[in-house]
Image (cartoon, rainbow, N blue to C red):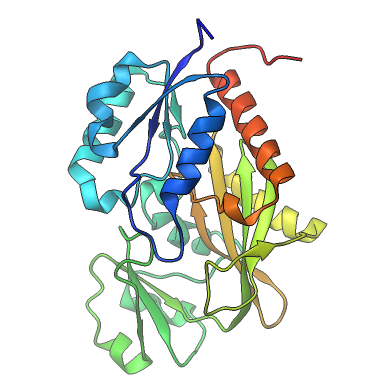
Amino acid sequence: MPGRPSVLFVTDLAYQAQGRRYCDEDIFLSSRLRNDFGIALCNPLDAAALMDAFDAVVVRNSGPVLHYRREYDAFRDKAAALGTRLYNPLSGRADMAGKQYLLDLTADGYPVIPTIDRPESLGLLPETDQYVVKPKAGADSIGLDFVSRDQLDRLAYAGILVQPRIDFRYEVSFYYIDDAFQYALHAPDPDRRWVLEPYHPTEADLDFAHRFIDWNTLDHGIQRVDACRTQEGDLLLVELEDLNPYLSLERVDETTRDAFVAGMTTSLHRLLGISTRP
């Protein structure tokens, strides 16, 4: 199809993630998007050198940027200087910018797992047998550890976050394109995070998830709101992934996958200023 807009699709097809095959998802997505766009796949290490030849850049399953921080920063700097159309844009306030948002949301009273980063704030956390310690710049559970209160009192706090270990019923994820809800998945077994099943959210669930989508104020792109259901029945935010959220498309039915591709195609058309076909 001549005249199709060109898209650089950034992905690390060799990245190994526990319980997930990132490459399968990106092979599927890029093959379907090719119906409307000229698609070229590239490794995140090559994105800065290649992106100015394309109409837009889609960042998908590119792996934790802490593994290639220098190259990712160069990519961001060049994209900002060129005014590159990025999907997702660089304006994300959540995981894209590190874990500071968990502290900000805690301070602002949002329904999030309480999070601190200094010993004088320990009184803000509920008493529990164990606490979760993770690096502020972490991703994909890298560097996560569980400690007792005694260990916490002896901890060096530089560059880390501390949260109570929540006794939750299950984790649930809500997937969005732009500000439109697409589907939800949950892990019925708390010990098997990525063994996901379809989840039918209530209006209250969607109100919860959409509150964080509104807070992030992204103009366009894909986001995943991860939450846990407490024993009392409340939802608490675990993570708001706005950089390269894995979508677990293999866990949804064909109709849902088709709808997701259609929604992403329409979103990219809007980003490129192309009228969608009737």
